[in-house]
Image (tube, rainbow, N blue to C red; front, side):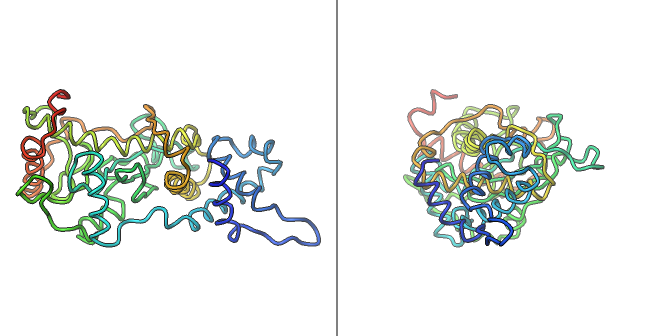
Length: 335
């Protein structure tokens, strides 16, 4: 974070975290509160370790950091908002077509396991397939490596398909409450293509949510489709990688209560968007971390779940498009 960006953030959160001095003692200034919180998120230090560079007791940090995280979320809430109308969804889709040659895409969806210390008495409730305790962060990213929405809190033991079903986003998607535009023609095509979200094999196929074909059913045309889809799907994995390398707290086990873990994780997500939009140093350094703990792809034995004919038809429309009017010259060299 460069200096102008920091002072912009400090200006936004100061009214929410400034405390009044008393006759007994002076309050901790907003600058110290914010720097302690950012250092905690960026370094992954424990409160006990953080007391040395901040000169604030661990007990006090236990109040300051969650409070400041809530203030950051409130001050920066406009930096991560789901589209509120069809035109905003179309703007996102236009970015995917211009930058990634994938028309009518509304976002790349995936999940990430966030390592935690389990609450007392929780047993194996948070134990995941990677053999550590976690909660799941489900998120969707746009073409510019920014989060459109994030939801966190599902225990790591739940399957990946189950994790997204616990989100408000998925419930609204199933209830047709997201104001998704109707299918429309894209460049060089006379056929309508549906607006879709994309994910990996872990998710259920829907008319508005498509995924790759299983390796056991691949033809040349489907390989082309899988490649074109994977270029876009990896955006969300890259976003997790960028955020993990910037906020090193994701490389440790977060030793907080689960409700405070949720706040810390969402604060990192909204700070990621804030930095992407305001800090040149952050937005120009797109890196990917191979250890981002994303949710696993679905096993072949589990990929035969039933899906509607409309969902299959929507995916076949994209197969046909990528192999004909939407074909690009370099795709044949990638399969």
